[in-house]
Length: 293
Image: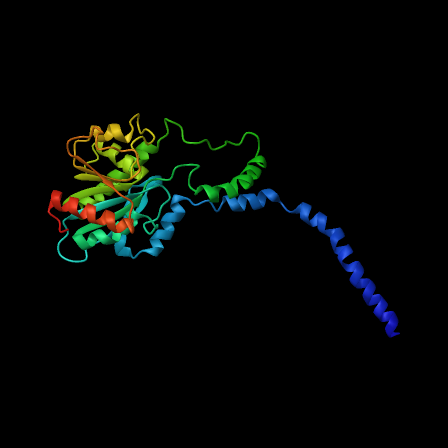
């Protein structure tokens, strides 16, 4: 009897995987690939989602709301640590960046208040089709294509940014709102941007942004044109004080034609770079506005 039971048990062990494998293909085929793709596409970060995350990450007294409607954004304010504030440095980050991103500009958000300059940190508006870092976005390309194939042929497809896109107007609204909020907290307003953000600041200042001074860090001389102008052209026409901090080997030269009130400082590579930038910026602010070094 025990031998018969053992034989039956052995047969069940052998036949079990076969039976389950026979049912497996149908189950796999019924799984909806577009649904998975749609779920992954839904993970794309958006400015409203990031704004909601920042609102919960910072205390209420640090949150400053900028603008209205769809372009309403969140800024993070940091007051001076001692003494009376001389003014506010608006730190403008690139699209999709957080006030705690590991870049030099966000380190300045915490160090400048020790020199009696409060800081207001805000990111530029999101650029459609460019909200993820390249590696992250590559992972979603196949899923996005599958989801698009599942839509009707008449469904609109998002196009990349065109030359006549509304981004310059959105950037200007964001910067105008930031300068207005900073004016309410300090008598002097300096706007600081790193890389591409620096190019946007110089362009906006030429469009009568109204800041008292501009600081651009590592802004490329021949960056893409904004309203038909590259940074080298905008800085040649600038009518307000500006500090241009460039680390070698970027393409700026002391022979470049700049407006009379624009200072170009070339910085050799060093570590940590944020502290090196902080020293140069404090020294320049002291010469311009009398702040402590």
